[in-house]
Image (tube, rainbow, N blue to C red):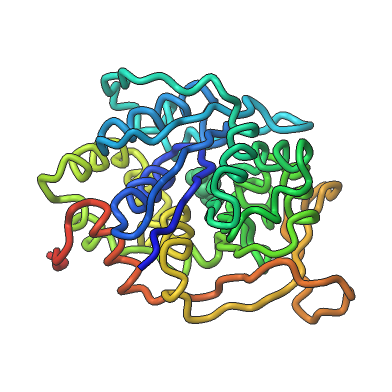
Length: 316
Ligand code: RIB
Ligand code: CA
């Protein structure tokens, strides 16, 4: 089986961390880099978190710092979900390695040439770095085998103060507009799919209960997010980026998908950052997104178990 080359654009972030663990644990995937964005928390923290996670994994994956802010307007972070440092405020020992001196947008372009036609790009953050790379070189999509984006809310059930908007899109709508309007075809894993594929808390606890170093580290950094989810009276643990990564690593887990045109609202007082889907295909624009509507939950959770060294765990 040919090995899949993965480049992850990410704002670690607790669910990003699980996605990054999944990619590194996958038997047939090689992670060629982490391009880091601001989003969940500030860039200084997301870069430090990316470096720390790679150290915990014991990998030599290069880490590239990207843009410290959205393209146009400032945005609120998601520290209330992930902790002030983005990793549960555990005061972990800072990684010894440093980030590359190459900007994330330039690294995305260089790696797209180095691995032309072979790269799966998984976008788990606000799309600032990807938009910049597109502006620097509009031919980028021609060299990327597959783009999977975690973002949006395809029927308006978002997760930010603007009801229909999801965080990654809402944090930098102009960047999302550039990517959605200039990337011919991508896979979209949105917040509504995330809500449909939560993990029971008992299963979640079992997945994190192991003695594997990854499980121990992840248990510590995800505790605040678990308390936030339970405080929100959620019935399950929602892990958006892990779901998107599962789809990127194993497209065969997708059980329902619709190809539609998706655009980004930039002006709406109540709707800025919304993902507007032409469900009835009345707009006459070429569909640009394969919208994932459902996946095989058991296969998804098996990938979580592998990422945490917890395979064969059964719920308590
Ligand atoms: O809305 C969920 C997305 O926003 C995830 O990528 C999470 O990490 C945050 O960035
Ligand atoms: Ca993220």
